[in-house]
Length: 71
Ligand SMILES: [Zn+2]
Image 1 (cartoon, helix red, strand yellow):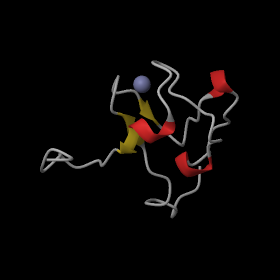
Image 2 (cartoon, helix red, strand yellow):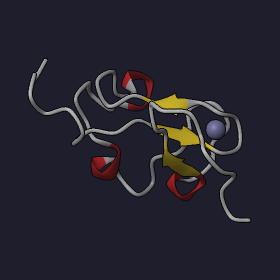
Image 3 (cartoon, protein in one colour):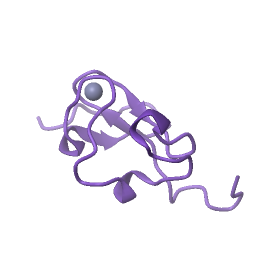
C-alpha cells in the first residue's frame, strides 16, 4: 500500500471483455506482481480473460463515462 500515490496507477479496462486491470492487484496468473502499473506491463502481456493486446485497453476512470469514445 502506498498512500499518496493516487492518480499514478490507473486502472485499465479491456474494451473487448470489460476485464479491468487493477495495478494494486496485478495479474499473478500471468506473473505480474501486485503494484505493477499498466504502463509497466510487458508489451506481450495480454488480457487474462480474452487474450486481447494491451492496445485494446483504455484507462478506466472512477467517474462515470461522459461520452462514448471514438465517435
Ligand atoms: Zn479482455
